[in-house]
Image 1 (cartoon, rainbow, N blue to C red):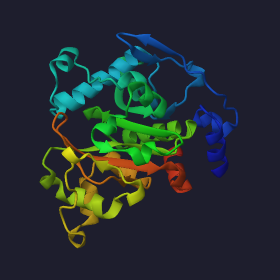
Image 2: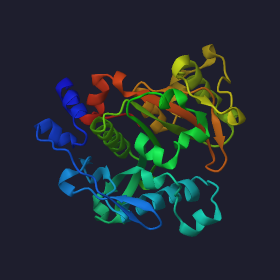
Image 3: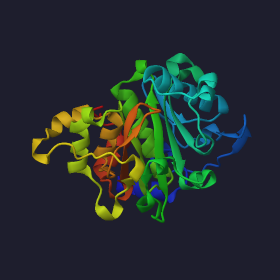
Length: 309
């Protein structure tokens, strides 16, 4: 396994399968501009960065504008139709969840091949913003909620993740596990040191989330020298319950699957939660130092060991 990791980190882009076979070759990712400045990635199929499968489900990066558009449409259905986020008139008119960051992100897709090969088969997505993309926008998305200078000051490759969602009919252990397999392949291929992002709990009442927020604060708070802090105007105290009153198992049950996935990788959280009224959520900043992730967890996500979702 260590040989696999060492070889993967030497390669800029390579599928996990090819790494295992020792036949990986760097892939050239062509970018074309379409539809009002959006960027659509179009790598050659044989050079796909990610291509993992579990039964009829497949995870890979979006390769055409239509696939990116399908991810934006899925995000709209989940965030606005289902979770009742507050949409601007422009978002409602487009029926797409889109912002200024999307053109500069890679879009990870879960595809149900039983639904065909077109955009209609996109049933899950996660967007990935590396430092190079953030530089073109001028900031990371998280910076509107947190002071992330401790992360940005790291000189190596960093990756912000966000906008994760899965279609309501596909929220299974297999789909969640496949998303994490895709994330792991991407992290390995781009030699990411730090993985971070705003993770959300549904609802806007922190008091109703006192147990999970307090658990994160007492058990998973980042060390002071590396701790992102919610911006003062939006800072919500997470220390709502005394440590000795917390039932850790009950708190974990209350956490969304993506936050649990970060924690299993050794993730830690910033100080303070943030209420996002537009998306009807309470956000926490989670980050993982991928250089400290054990071989056990790399094996967990690259070899398909079942995860509790």
